[in-house]
Length: 165
Image (cartoon, rainbow, N blue to C red; front, top):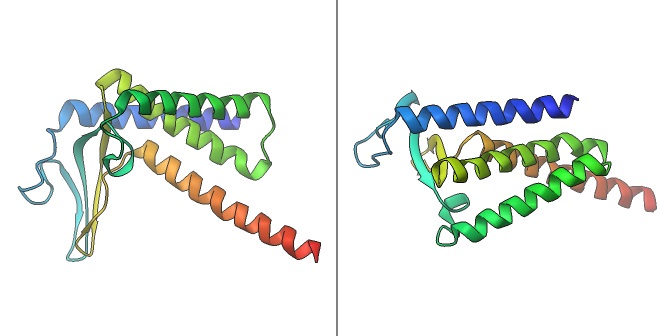
């Protein structure tokens, strides 16, 4: 039940923020300066954070944006596989929440394609003059969960290696 609540909350907040940005902010204007046509959140000499409105038909950094339909099919297949795994199999306990967040984030980005024809991205960070790719809540959940799974798998691998000696 806890996983379902987290899944639903992530989808709700992801949808709500994307809806608000899509309907209330103009498309980002990169050459007009901070906050780039969006809303400024924080600005200093080494870090800026703003909420902007950008669109993306690809993956991170716009990769595969020339294949949006193929990418959509791939996203649907992966999300269906993750949801099937969560509902009908028992993933290891440390991975259950991470897989839930990945599935919710992926579903949020899939819904964008059906609602807007692209993914709506909005969180823009510049750290020491490096402009990071603009992302959304779904992307954050996916990235953090994949990183968590990677770190846990390294820990499990190290533990199993140590106990096998």
